[in-house]
Length: 214
Length: 128
Image (tube, rainbow over all chains, first blue to last red):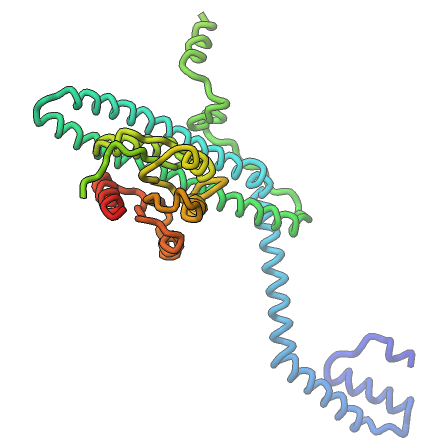
């Protein structure tokens, strides 16, 4: 049936014209009956599409839009930085916090032990008062253990996020174009915050550097 | 019941700061013979070669935890009667229950104060 392959006419007039053509080709066919069948099929399709398929189709279309938006947003976020730089840097910073608080706590405890030794040489009530004070300092210093454990948990959480982000990147690997370059910070590279011990200069390094300009 | 404060006390923690704090708090209540271990295996080895009248241990340590240490101690014919205090940040009910089932003598949750430590030691050694 070559005319079936032709573009389908639109509108009631086109439908009538089409039925007339079919009637001319197959005179025994009753066009009204064909129209009824077509209307019935269209009506049932429209009914199904409205109730179930149409709803499902809308959901699928919406899902497609969400995925496309997510992909565009992830591309704009420069997610590679999260796994390559941000999370490793954050965990290093947290490790440094643990190390610095441990060092500070050690210094406090050392002073406390000196005070305890001095208290041992005193004969008056002052010895008791002094010991009571150092006891409170000892108690307070136990924060270092607690914060250390909490930070360890945070590091574990960050690593879990890192893995998830890596998985998302792998899933949305095909980028939707390149994101625009990020603007440079106003003060260039001068706003770095405290350095990690491995890459930091100590006071003697800074003194030497200053002296080298003289 | 008077407490023999000249007894050897073993303190176990993987945080050196905490060992130092506990050692100093013990010193303030006249326990001067204090040994340190940094995990359960280290502690068990020390217990098997020396005599300790009290063990004060953290829970969360590697490779052997405080709970495993406690189980080993309670399963050892020579060591099983040693008073054992757990000092830990683990404060969930299931932790306390597990420690109790393993035979812990008392349980102190971090952060703790000197008065709590003194009170628990007196309680544990008073009933030892």
